Length: 118
Image 1 (cartoon, rainbow, N blue to C red):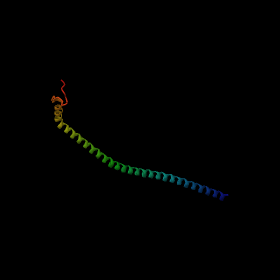
Image 2 (cartoon, rainbow, N blue to C red; image 1 turned 90 degrees about the horizontal axis):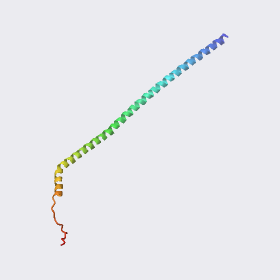
Image 3 (cartoon, helix red, strand yellow; image 1 turned 90 degrees about the vertical axis):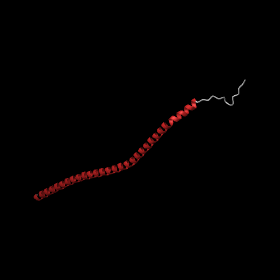
Image 4 (cartoon, one colour; image 1 turned 135 degrees about the horizontal axis):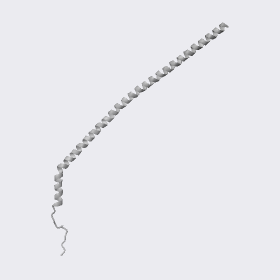
């Protein structure tokens, strides 16, 4: 009976060691899963930052060229307005004189088709 009792004790100890190894393996697996998750998150963050940087560079290039176009168009518009204003001030006096002379200088004449009836 002692040999049976010893055998049972050995089986119980083996079962306990197996159970301990299983628990340890589960802990290692959980630890490795957490580590893999952290690595994946870090990799995704790195990729996202890289893509955002590329996007900002492209956006800067596109928006920068649009900004240059906008500034160029605005400068051309200002130049056109300056030219028109200058032309207005230069020609205003002579045009007013012409207009007033046309309106005010009346020379009364009888129309050639007018027939005097008497």
